Length: 404
Image (cartoon, rainbow, N blue to C red; front, top):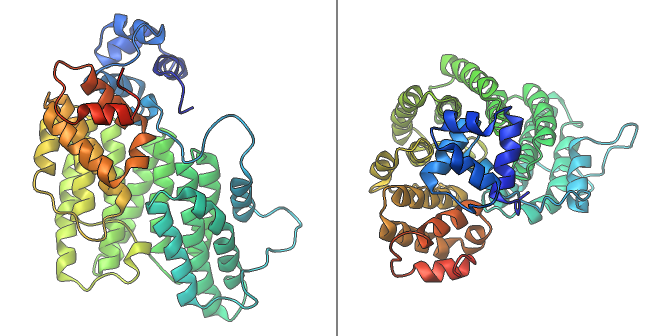
C-alpha cells in the first residue's frame, strides 16, 4: 500500500525473501541496527544509498521498497467499476454475447489505429482514469474488427486487437495488477500471432518481459526478451520498425540483467542498443512509431541513467545525463523519470543544490505526479534532513508535506 510505513514494508519484503534482519543486513552490506531501527519505526527514513543497498539485498527495485504508488488507490476494497469494466473487456464472461462495438459498423483500420494511439497517449500521460474509461470500448471495437470481413481484414483486426490488449496489459501493470496484465498480454500474443504483422508477437513479448520484471521473475524476463530479440535480429533489422522492436527488447534484457546484479553485461547491451538507435537517423521513420516501440537514443540513455543510479553509480549517472537532448517523441512519463533519477544522483553525491534545481524543474512540469510519488518525497526528505538547505528546498518540502 502506498501509505504503508517504510519499516512495515521492509519487514514484509524481508520475510517474503526468507531473510532474518541480520541476513538482510549482510546481503545489503548495511548495519543490522539500521534494519532493526527501520522495522521498529525508530527511524522513519534512510539515506538513498542505504535504500539502494536494502533493495538490492531484497532483490527488488527501490520503488518497491519505497512503495511505488499504483495508478489507483490500493485500499483492499473491491475494484472500482472502471477497472471491473476493463477486466470484462480483457476476459469476456463465459457464454455471454460479444460486446457491441462503439459504432454500428466496424471501424476502418485507420480509425482503429487512431483510437488505439489516443489510448497510448493517455497512458504515457499517466491519465489512467480516462484510459480506464475508454479502454473497454477500444477493445470491443478491435475484437469486432478481428471477427468480420475477409481474411486480410480479419488479420488487420487481429493486429488492432493485439495492440489494444497490449495497452490493457501495460495499464494493469501500472495499476499493480500483474496477473491481470499477463492475462491481457497472453491474449495479445495470440491475436498478434494471427495478425499480418511479423513484428507484433515480439513487441508483445517485450511487454510480457516487463510484467515478469515487476513480479521479480528476472531470469524469465531476461530469457524471453533475449529470445525474442534474436528472432527479430535474424529477419527484421533492415527497417526502422525492426530496429525499434529489437532495440526495445535488448534494453529489456539489459534491465533484467542489471537487476540480477550483472551491471557490466547490462551496460554492454545498453551501449549496443544506443549504437543501433543511431542508425535510425539514416532510415525512413517507422510508420505509427508510437505503436511500435519507445526506442531512440534518448530512451536508451534515460534507461542507462536509471540503471546507474539504481546500482549506486551516481557519478556515472550524472555523466550520462549531462547535455542530453531528448527527442521529440520521448513520452512525458520518461522525461519525469529522468529528472527524478538525476535528482537522486545529485543527492547521492552530496550536491544538494543540483538536486533542488532538478526537483524544481520536475515540480514545474509534473507537480501532481511529483506530489504522489513516494520516491520524490524520500529524496526531498533526505535533503531536508541533510546538513544544508539550498534555496528552493523549503518550498519543495512544504509542497510535499516534508517540512516540519
